[in-house]
Amino acid sequence: MKRILFILTLLALLGGAREAAAQVSGVAIGPKIGFYLSSGKPAIGAIGEIPISRELDFEPGIETVLGITNATVLIFDANLRYSFTIAGETLRPFVMGGLGINNTSISVGLGSSASSTDLQLNLGGGLVFNSRSLIQYWAGLKIYVLNGSDALLQGGVLFYL
Image (cartoon, rainbow, N blue to C red; front, side, top):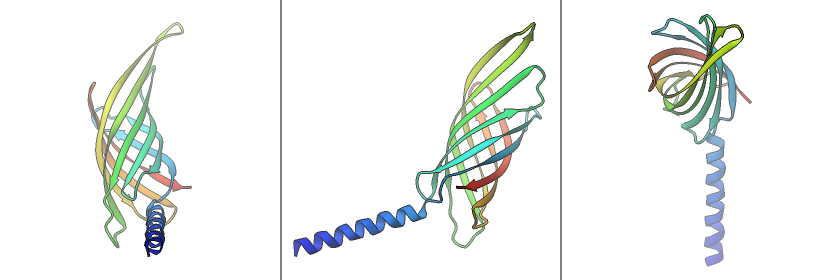
């Protein structure tokens, strides 16, 4: 009797693990564009999505700010995104937060340059337009705080691998 109970418990656990794995959407990568609201500068970059659970994803990203003379601004993000899955809906709202590293290199002339690196705290949210396919569109707002602040209105496409 104990063996049968052990085998049934083991099968239930394996079935639950398989169900949990089926809920994970998969790894994705794609381009993003944005517009900084306070500075009025556009940005382009790339974002990834690595699932942790059905609702929680790790989002690494990189972006560069365009339109700054004699400077290169690169921002590296490491965010967690929590998505609210609403049954039957094509929109999935999300909230996100994490850390960013802002690296600014300024050319000061005659081949010399200066560089600074700042830590940022990212907070934001948005919507994923769930197309129920391997291509999904998203849009959101990311707010940077610590060492200055700004807000990035952004959007992009995720291609699931």
